[in-house]
Length: 161
Image 1 (tube, rainbow, N blue to C red):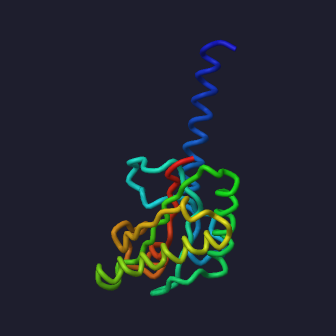
Image 2 (cartoon, rainbow, N blue to C red):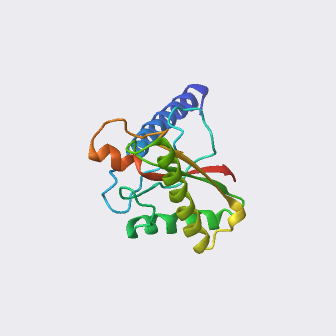
């Protein structure tokens, strides 16, 4: 295989990978059951973290783990069990309704409930960190119920592998 063919193969693979990454980031909506949407709140491309796990969503003004979220968390826990060196930051997020102080507290409760659920599934507590962003890092800035639902979430940023 000559250099031209190698370059062409790398270019094609890179293009396909980029296209697939864009599709994965778009994902589904908060209400579509087990959501295979991946990502972190680092949507501005600064590259924080070493990857992500599936995000979960919450109902308005709630921090409890829904049955749909429990399925996603089980999958995330299994991924963490396969890679025993993986450490993860759990980020709690809210929509922008309510005061900033209230939303920071709600985001913290969401992150804590998510972290506790992962621990209940066998993930070691010392492999998890948490942070509340409140309303500061929305996925969707529209003022619709669908946008609010997308913003009520927990994200998972892989810190080390």
